[in-house]
Amino acid sequence: MRTKRAAVLAAVAALALGLTACGDDADEGTDNAGGDKSFAAGSTMERLNEAQAITIGTKFDQPGFGLKGLSGQPEGFDVEIAKIIASELGVPEDKIEWVETPSKTREDKITEGSVDMIVATYTIKDERKERVSFAGPYYEAGQNIMVKKDDDSITGPESFQDGTKKICSVTGSTPIEEIKKYVKDVPSQLVPFDTYDKCRDALQSGQVDAVTTDNVILLGYIADDEDAFKLAGQNFTKEPYGIGVKKDDAEFRDFINDILEKAFTDGSWQKAWDETAGTFGAELGTPPAIVRY
Image (tube, rainbow, N blue to C red; front, side, top):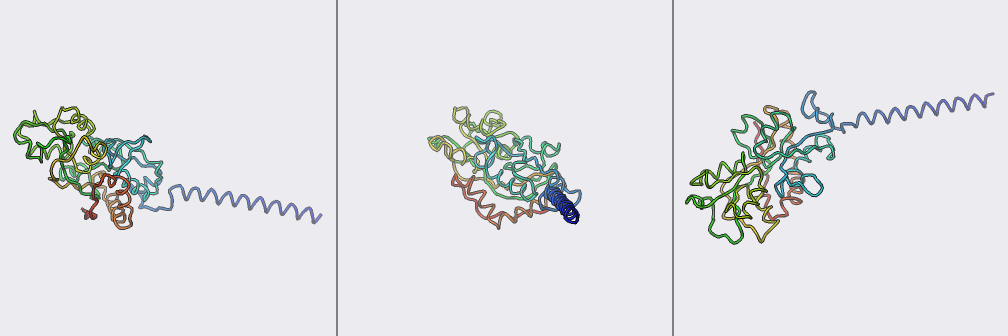
């Protein structure tokens, strides 16, 4: 009798232990759903962490920074910077939704809530701050000009002051506004497209004489076809790239700035560059000073 009772008690104890173990697993699953991160209640960081998902805007047509690859996903320096931020939010890489954001749509994408942030060769400018906020900068580029390899007639932006040559850039971008200062007859000389791929194609076909945008983007095109293109002259602007977020979301902006400063010192910023735009021969330089406001 005692033997039977002991067996029953042992079975009950084993069942209880099993239920406790299952309960522990369930609790662990709940606790780890958002990783081991903890954020202020009501913050953008908490929302994204709990959702375990983030929507990020970037370019799909810029070698080295944001180019849609064979995998169907964008690849480049901007993409890697965005992944660093997502990781610090506790969001897995496969839970990032990438949204193509051409230059002219960037502010709209943020203000309408289509994206949580934008990392897309996005130059920090005061007029843009009227609609969105910026973290960063995380890189400083410079505007340059790309021409055909055998063209020695264009040596810089001043080459367009005689009114004879056509140059292409992207609608809504900083470069298209900057080159207007040098072009004699904007309507006839300046050819706008919505992507830089179309500008490159126009240069290749002879529709335009040059393409202008940031040097690192042009270096990506040159690396793809060194026999076809080259840079003409030196950089003639400074373009600090920032990360766009909703206007006045100071907590999220500060959070991203903290991550960038950490990346500058822990090697992840340099690693992201070396594996992307750095393969084109462009120099990363020293980390830019974060602008907090």
